[in-house]
Length: 259
Image 1 (tube, rainbow, N blue to C red):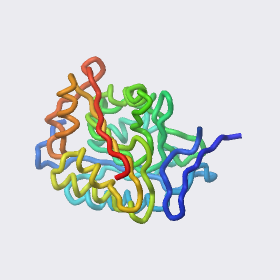
Image 2 (cartoon, rainbow, N blue to C red):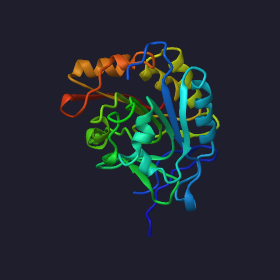
Image 3 (tube, rainbow, N blue to C red):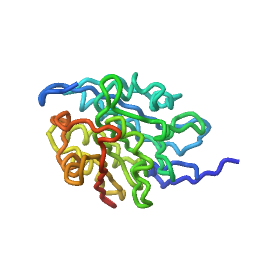
């Protein structure tokens, strides 16, 4: 029997997972989107507002940049992980996703449509193929969890490929009529040259739900990491060199509770 732990509210659904090349400052960049609202055999709670969140993000960022793909998450595990990421996640500069997520003891996971199928951070190494992903932004619960001291255990495999920054949540993000515009707001903030940290925080603040927001980066030192985390923008991220494997000496994060 499959153990489940589902989070749901009337009209508001938490996204918690069931189961115990340089660019000029004014140059258009490449982005891709992967999202899922319903799940095979109802193995996850439905997220009714995902399609608005993702399509509005696409429509806004399309005004200034190049959308390379917009996929649902049917049989998507292979293209999130090292088997196929050179065709998708590593084929864009920014990847935006919305689905259920979780932070388990040794891995961060993202729910695919297929019953029981999860993209697993242990098998994800981003930033070292094709164009190389720089910004991973996932509207999903817990994937940047840190309060158990195992954040690097979960996210290290991803960053070792050269990913520059990850945006997500350490606890809960919600799916509701008041959060359907969060993707659009994030894209708009980036276009206005806000720092990625602020663009994510501001976009995911909500008056009706208590949003838990996190950003994570790597560095050669504590101060270098903080500078990358706090100053990176959609217009300048390529000025922050990629750090891979042994070049990473530090990781850092910033979080906000109940925005």
